[in-house]
Picture 1 (cartoon, one colour):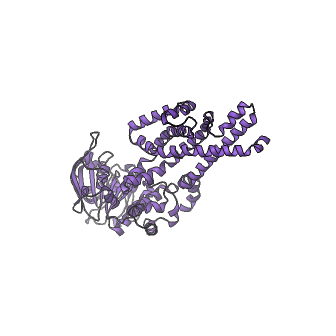
Picture 2: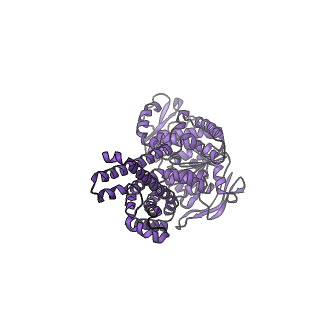
Picture 3: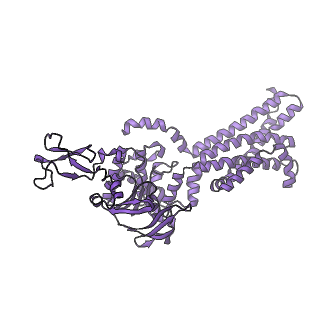
Length: 226
Length: 305
């Protein structure tokens, strides 16, 4: 523990880098997956292509992708952008399937009755389909969030600053305490992100909690309404 | 007034759902489309608000072809109530009722005030306004659905088997409520059901449909019961099995002024007042051997639904 207090600035600085670099892929994955998910849900052909592509992309080893991207993007080999772009690709690869499932989880009856009462296609998408796809979208986003936070550590192998530095440095110096602290702080970041996502979900989707309480509510009001 | 002119609908898979259908649905009356599943009755209903476009023929509302304007504007001017209510699960009851006024740009405060009044109209406690649909019973959800259908004060209300998924007691309740509403509000109601008792109870004009939306018979419930146009109609309304043909049961000894009625199969259907052994409305001398027709013997015909 003493090592942590002595190096608190280093650890907190790396944690800040870690947070900063993992937020981008999570946000990008979420935004990009919405049109892709809609397409995949709308057209069977698009679904097959997008989900296969997602599966293939996700199977590329992260280190291989990190070192290939500079050639493809024209960036310098040590550029942060390489890691961020690679993690965006992984995030999208995971989120596309989740988003396709999310949009197909919305009840046909609700969509059809929304059309029948006079929603235009655009307003129906944003005010009915998108919010109702929310719970499943959130579930995928939580997976993406955790996987991004853990994958980012690999970026340290190509010199991008993150908590992964503590693993490499600790390993090279044969100093387990440093590795342990790296793990603990990575977990803290992952749990922090997850908690934020769950809280935001509760705030934006209050009806999901109302539904979960349903059993209790109906039994409590049954005697009243009867 | 809604007019169908030789309307045909063939779906892309080749199914001929509606074939050359022509009919006038009078204003401020309830027209019920009744038939077995797959007869095209829902397709007919959904063509009125352009959820489905006809393959050929035209539909006019008050003399205007509905295909001439925008589908979205048309739908916003017509109330729509469906089975399982079709409410938005992520909106509170009050927002569900106010959905269409809000879409049309009515101010939220005004839309909510009006929505509260509509809850009264359909007999719902205002305390339910801030619940989510999933927190209501099936019957309450249907009432919210009706309130939503009425929210833009439409001239036309389309109802697609709205009471099909609720239990019989609640259904009775909702049917009575609809009769009361129709009495007060005077809408042109188009109602789809497969339940002939419901059709006879609610319809001013009942349209019995065969496959391909072929009209087997159109008329008031009385006309149809009195003169079924074909064996199909007779069988559909249950007349051939004697379910609606009631006779006085002479084997039961009378106590008081009521006599027992039985249906064609010999099951007890109810009682009828017969002071001094004479049925009301029957001519002199016609007594316990006469037969009476009943329009609403439904309570004892649960198996018929």
